[in-house]
Image (cartoon, rainbow, N blue to C red):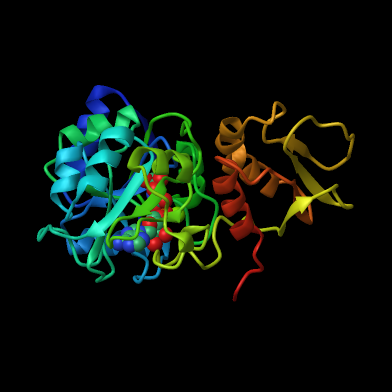
Length: 321
Ligand code: TXA
Ligand code: MG
């Protein structure tokens, strides 16, 4: 076991240092605009294996690769006009494209032996600067213990993975706070595997097509998406009208109630972006209070609200032992 995990600032010299550490087969905490990742080089079995081990993640659940630019990312998968249009419109940014794998240099563990690969070009400046020093993509799942709440700050990663990694590169609070949208282009049918900041509507507009019907929030092809996820230690009750005794209250809109239990609002103005920025941060905060559960007010299931509700639904599922 490693002793001591440090948080290091994203100065130029530290970013260069982080690149050297990654080249030497280490796994570290890395910021992105969505959530923090647990990153390592994607071309080495031993490194990828360690990522799974640190997270306690089943090997059947494949990883997303992070690239320095669109041409490197698109070079590793089979592409058509859909991939070209989406990458032009949404990269760098919170969109992950799944397509049939072309690269021969990626570890088979990354894809869990599937014939597809998930790729994205992140928008966060720190990881983009880091990638410029590297000749390989970074494999990075969210930097939480398996099934737990995703981290949106370096401090959150420290809480999740203390003593399991040498350091976390601090890139500030993740700007979006919710994982990337995953789109499946591996067949002629275009479908969403995971909802995120880039909405179905925005994708349909760019591609000028209707997304395949089975995409409506049901994640079938992304293994690992259907199990418990994003879970605090206490139960989460969604679409709540009001809080019950000893529950914390997570509102969407103004807070009226006075209570001895903690009360927070995802967004007093009912702004979806603010709510997604706050979602994991506030669940994490309320999880630490002495409450029997967290009740979450109903959030409209439109636009970015669809991604927020998707995460809350999974957070509210009863734990499978
Ligand atoms: O925003 C994000 O995507 C963050 C940051 C760190 O980039 N990453 C992230 O990774 O959320 P993770 O491992 O927590 O979730 C990745 C999801 C998994 O549910 C996995 O099933 C899916 O992506 N996935 C990865 N490769 C896939 C593939 N080839 N086919 C289908 N789904 C895939
Ligand atoms: Mg995750």
